[in-house]
Length: 443
Image (cartoon, rainbow, N blue to C red; front, side, top):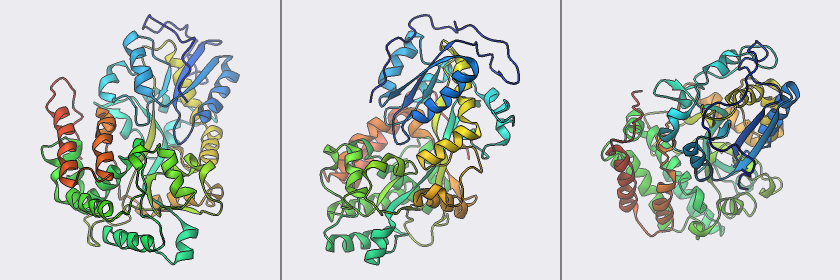
């Protein structure tokens, strides 16, 4: 699973690759025959979709692209940033992503990628969804191209629900009532794995933001004192605490690898619901029961009179791709990005990964036969402009710290008050550290 880093460039730290002549078909001046080093997070989407794009680059430019998978981006690549020899392209994603605040100065801006033409000859900026630059823009600089359109929701088996006459819940009260019905059938409401315990943090934050409106999100984004004590967040934490105390979680999650835990939902059907992003179907493709009919719904609200409509979703471009300015061949990193944004490569991603990319209009109505992809398209359509996102967890790289209290909470070792205290301590530490540049969010 880890990246193979043998043969990577060492030392130096400046752009030592030869460059070619810039033109409309070579917008970044990629040198023919040069080497390109890419390290890609090997998570729910795998990494061979980047290999697909890199092969197109190699065909066009006689380059030698090396695409390596990694599940520990920060551990493996931070030393290379420090040493001045980072890869030319990185998918800075996953539980072990590098906090953007620590590498901003070392990243190339990517505006020229969107201003370039794709492989079909159309300007890339004209082919992508609106606002896709936003999640990769820090301090006014566009430095991360988020490739996949990620829709966050709660996922379930259409066939299991239909056979039991269950209705997917819209509120936390309905979810808790469904937990009681599941228990009667010898099943659980939820399941979690140790590396993905914070999926329930995402669910909690999204529910609270839908219930209380943008001010809940802004307090979290700006690391405000007592932001985790917001009444809306507390109501969701209490609902989750009820689910834990009533035994509605499959036990032992803190000691279970996350895909093994997810298989208890997708393959064994021990649990009814699972909160995740749209990558879940592809991630569990080999461990999903035949006829499962994976479908998604928007995350629950607390009441039926929430500030934002139930149909509101958290959705944003995800899988942030960066090009270090200190890499050997930044032009090569950008050229692989350009290839990824071609119709052929983007369609290949959606068809094989069952998720939309930021390139619009490439997913057919039948979702390539995927009920989960159909659900994502429907959720995006129904949400309309009622879409939000936040960046603070990724920006400050605090997910690993947050996993600790969440695993304790879901195991029943700490209560909602203990969880709140632990999370506030993590955000306060960042807020009070003047050496960390803050990402101020105003809207």
